[in-house]
Length: 408
Image 1 (cartoon, rainbow, N blue to C red):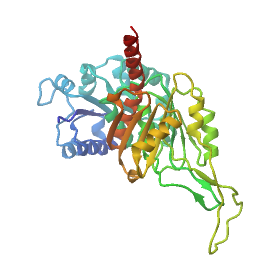
Image 2 (image 1 turned 90 degrees about the vertical axis):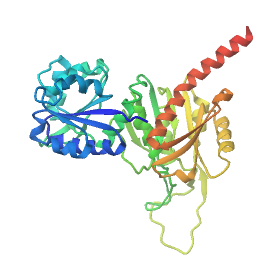
Image 3 (image 1 turned 180 degrees about the vertical axis):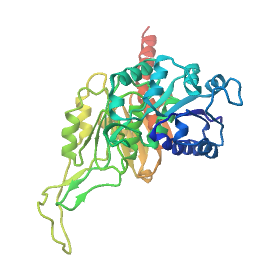
Image 4 (image 1 turned 135 degrees about the vertical axis):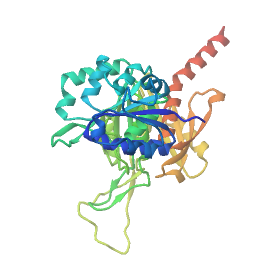
């Protein structure tokens, strides 16, 4: 299998050193990498950094390169150009078609979408000129991973910080295959483990890490969906670019958060491991240590079942089922009982791991699409799950056409 070819363009910002780590990550993943450094980037990093890490060629001059026309050959070679970091100057050049050095000339000659990783002072990023230039690039089909809000190298605090390279790598993986195919879709997603308080110190909870839900949130948002996340306890960071992220650890808090957001969602994906039981009486003071303790438990609200009864026309409802045995049987029963459009079933052995195995089961499916077995990293499986959700409308259309044919 041929790996994708990435041209990493590094411009002259203080975050240029972070491109070294990005190059290392991409090389370990198996991408073929070549690097272009602007003259200002060479003030922060050296060509040797990138050639040693990637084993690929490094270029910085339009006229003093071993290739007589490097801007054309490098532009044609790349499956994806990643500009990390992208300065306001280089963004402006690309938006206005200026080509006065190797990097800007390559960007003008490249005919496929590019991925921009802006990083700069908050005032420079929020300046109307920069905003207009980024809007121009997006309108042409380029992808932009927004910077993080935080403390910047210049001493300012605000939006302009280079994002974690884990997020940059996820964006690269996404845009090499999917692009922004979910624009206009609004998603309500739950993730993480439920926690039901016993007293101020102790809780009832479960082993969910939230990794699958966060992988779904990331994939959905990168592909263009508006994602509102309601989450319990999670072991990994929430992607910073979601439309909204609300913490709701116990079942009643999650119920309120979900119900207040359900109506305008096109897809509702319930990936959270909500606690099934909660103590009847929650102590306000810590219970003293004792030889034995009896807790009376009551059932928590079944949020997924409630959503099934309230589902709006055209709204897609997707559930998850973690099982220890009879995976397909139990998942199919849950699919039918809770009026789901699709369910993702997995054995509990994958809880907390970075990889997973999932069986997707769809309601009202044709026989050929009854089940789909997915495996891989949770990021990979997240994209595959999304593809199956997208296919629900297509499969319904195919069934309707088949019925019309039979009726005729």
